[in-house]
Structure formats: structure tokens, C-alpha cells
Length: 147
Image (tube, rainbow, N blue to C red; front, side, top):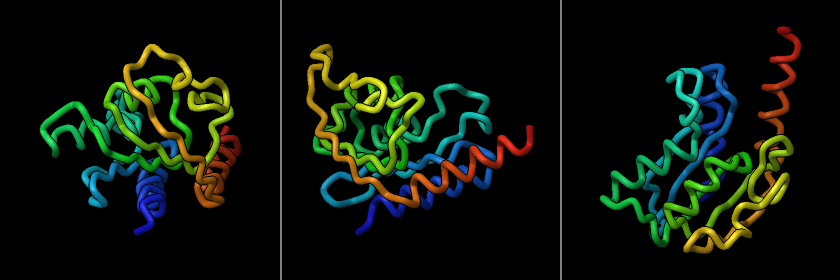
């Protein structure tokens, strides 16, 4: 199953709501346990990033804040807040669809996961996907035209 495609479908939902088009999927034992997209503007909540919502949903599904053995697929490199949450939740593998040259905290700007402050290790996999990058470029280009 192409989990990044599902994350991209979530990103399109965010785009249709006027949100920054980011989608996330969490998988455990080859089963999807959470899908989410950005809802920051909709919910008027700075923490309503796709990754944060997906972590919250997955924790409720498995009944634990520890998401041991889980994998996350996200269309845009997580920011510092989301990267920290991913590490705290003990997500095993993180698949990233595009670089975040403004706020990326998994290697583009800084790599929080290199620091030993987390009692866990997240295996980061850069799976660059042209569609993940394209939807973000289109969104931000349209915002610039409006101004």
C-alpha cells in the first residue's frame, strides 16, 4: 500500500480548506491507525498540525502515548514542535515526502533528532515525492497572488 499517497490525499483535504497542504498517516503492523491533515486555521489552534493530530488519534486507537513500532508518513518535513512530538511518541520510522526549507527540523534547517535529549531513536527516511512538493508550491504561489 502506498501510504505516502494516502498522506497526499489528506494534504489535498487541507488544501481544499485553505490550510497549508500537509497530510500524515500513522501505520502499525501494516495497518493504518491514523490519518490527518493540517487544521490550524480551521481550529484556530497553533498545534493543529497534521502530525500532532495523527499522533493524538493513533494514541487513542492503541490506548497508549507510546507509539512503539509505528511508522509515520508525512508530506512535508516536520517542524520543531512536530519533530519533538514524534520523538516523544517513540515513532520508529518517519517517511518524509518533501523538504521544509523554512522550518524543517529533521535535517533541512536543523535536526532535532540528532540531539540525545530524546530517549528514543527515530529512523528518518527521505522519500522525496514530486507531488508533495508541487501541492505546497501551488498553495504558496496562490497565497502570494492574493496579497
